Length: 121
Image 1 (tube, helix red, strand yellow):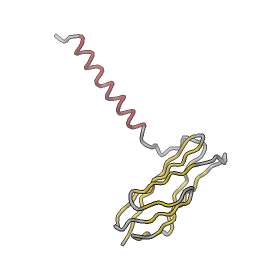
Image 2: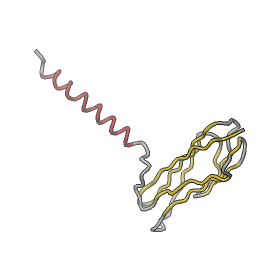
Image 3: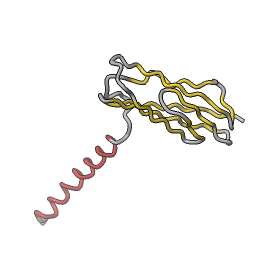
Image 4: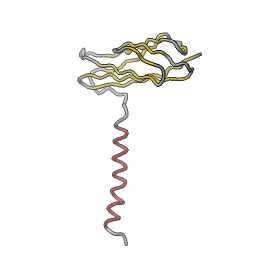
């Protein structure tokens, strides 16, 4: 005989797991803009990137409402200098693939983009 208490717990556990999963998934950047602007691309100059070199990263953002935007750049290696839609990236000393992440935020929402860059010796 199954008690009412164990039946209730068995029904709640899957529900709690589902809610936790939905919460975790919703915390990841979606890649879809939530505002009235969107990231078109991230440009890397030069095209061929070497270790211990300075690279220019430029974000091209479509912003039809001329909204004031804040750019948040991050790199999985090396150091990013500057702010705004164009920054400098000092590449790491080790050849590998590195990820550049960009969050653009404004009053109406945000957008997210990432680019993987191969750094060569």
